[in-house]
Image (cartoon, rainbow, N blue to C red; front, side, top):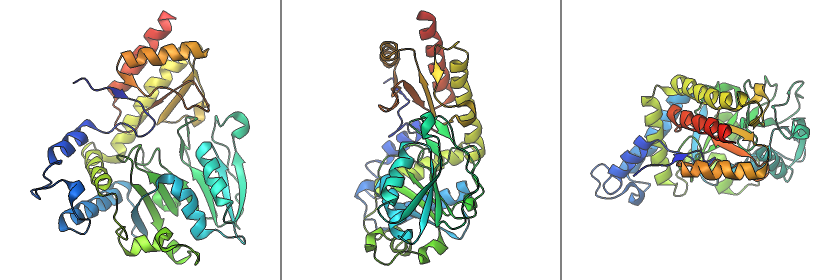
Length: 357
């Protein structure tokens, strides 16, 4: 079997070693005589998986002791609602830095629960850069930002120093680089980009926030409910958490976040060089100081050429290069599991396609 090089934005590429290990354990997990998918979430076998995943995440991200690590469901989309449902009200204001479609969705949900205000936005420039965020009002309950923007291909290089708590959607670049977790009060991320398969959402939340929850919130939508129950209040997505633990093991074996950040920077350099050296044949969407190391977005001169590029790439066993429908063009998502060799393959194809046209 010749595997396809996977540049999809999500669900995205998983490390081959992880898939192979899961395959080997699929029918008989550590002598249990059954698949990990069949284990009771209350069993000692699954509990070991659950605790291992939490411990590895804490180690790799250097998460301080005053944070809870939760494994929830519903993706980042549920967090758009769950965060303001628990912490916003008509008497409070949440501030938003607008950098793309996911910021827009988070803002729309927050408006249902309390006051919101846009503190900075790059919408007028088709979200082609990260806007300047300064003079953050001290009266806000939190500042919300999206650390990486898959559709437009922009990423925060430096996070703002904020006088109010910072809430970050890190779905598409969590574990791709080192960050100072203590600068954030809540970090949330759907797994299907860098963490594993779809189905589990990681939430890293300061413990003191659990005492600030609004009262009129359904029990299953309270963070404290899941914290008290070790994310076992209801049946968790056990297989997705198992896969998450394997991805974290792989990441640790590769040298952790220092090594993966260096590799991701090199991958991005290869593809952005192919764009910049094309004499305008490929045009990057994001401004150079805001370029994402996870999602490389670019356009060609017309739709016909773009369609041909994507079709020929598929013939070369490269998949997922179509841009989001709201932007068009092309997008190469180069999350942790995508190798340097994969990016070199795409860059070589880009050069060959340019020379042919």
